[in-house]
Image (cartoon, rainbow, N blue to C red; front, side, top):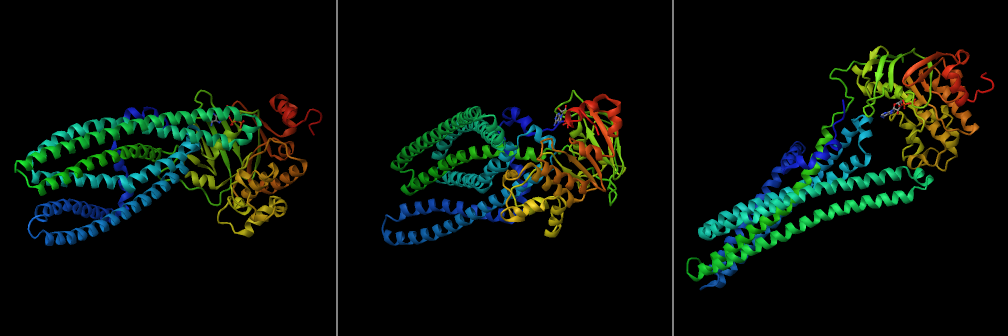
Length: 601
Ligand code: ADP
């Protein structure tokens, strides 16, 4: 089974897109909780639009009556009515703006959380085919686009629809004949706008993809800054980044060009039409078919109608942009995690004893279908047993961990934890029983206390300190400027390899898992660190099931059993001395990796 992601689809996206503001209806479930606010905004919108329309009637009244006999009093009256109407308009506009913007912010905050919650559930396999920067750009750029739409464009669009409909009706009441002429021009105005609007939309989508590519590239380079500098790769990166940026710029400019043409076209068409109306209406007044007040109102409404078409076409572009964003967000939300809890998960025994069994297991990585990472793999680890996995690089050792953590499911065969097939259990339950100390432990940008507490977020400070003690980490932590409160820096760059490992071990100790997975660091530690790390490991490995990807002789010698893996298969099993006596792969590995060339003892 392969992930279906928006990445796969974005290639086909433009073809699929064919004018799809409908996608925006998917926002509705997020709006529903704020129904009262939505209704309030609707009322404010209607009141505001009605008052604007009423102004035209006021204008007609004033022009026809205000300039005749007793016009002074009529003008006084008109002014006070006008002021009243304007106050209502201002209040309704305030309410509309405030409520609608509030809904926009609120809903987008909810969507951001939903997307983040969802992405956290996706299996590591998803992130192999999707760049983190891409996901980040969904969370920031795309949600911001949606915010513009929910927090303004939709209400602007609705207001303009109301103004258009109301204005058109009042036009018809004033002069049917002129209205007919006005509406002859409507298709002439609207058709080119819609056509060019579509082009704008297609280009917007491409522009967003390019921006995501830019941030993806920057993210990747910056997160590997040490590698970049070590290989003095800056020149190439600078050049490639510049290329990416320039390409994004080209795509954006092509969008802006289309948008500029669209705006110019709207202005030209709309104002020509208004000029024509004035001309025709002027003739009607001269002929006595219309009063000057009616013409004034007519022009007022024509401008409203024309303006509403113009404003609408502006926001249509926004709506279309947001439709692209919404599409990708909801696609991301619809991406099913490869590993999902079954509808009725089997619960693991509590406390878990830590018996692990791989039975007749074969597994291919989704991105590597041809070669089995593990095949016909059988391994039973008894509770409390310590197993060392040994094998050349690429043998499948890490894969054993990945499957046990249920980042992937095997193609054939099963993995049981305490006789429960983990495929039938909730992955969260499974992972709760497992502690992982990886080769390159992740240090988060927080203080030491929080970094260790990561192992068990509800642990109190004393428990954290006890874990640090057991992991031989207290001494170096206390020596830091602020002790346990010292900020460890982005990704722990201020710590040595051995120190980072001891933090990871402290985390695992705090977690107190039934099964511990340890990927020993291949990088050499200084002998002082080495000794301390070994001590710490002894404490955590004692009394629990452990599977260790071993790189050090001392670890191997203390294992209850050594399992030699090659090409995804177990090729030998046993104790160190016996395996050495057998010769074969283990002896070769031992000579190379553990420096046993002289004396295996
Ligand atoms: P080891 O830990 O023994 O060095 P791994 O378990 O990491 O080996 O890898 C076993 C095989 O699976 C290798 O051939 C490797 O290239 C492949 N592999 C590992 N991870 C992935 C992945 N995420 N996608 C595709 N192939 C992978």
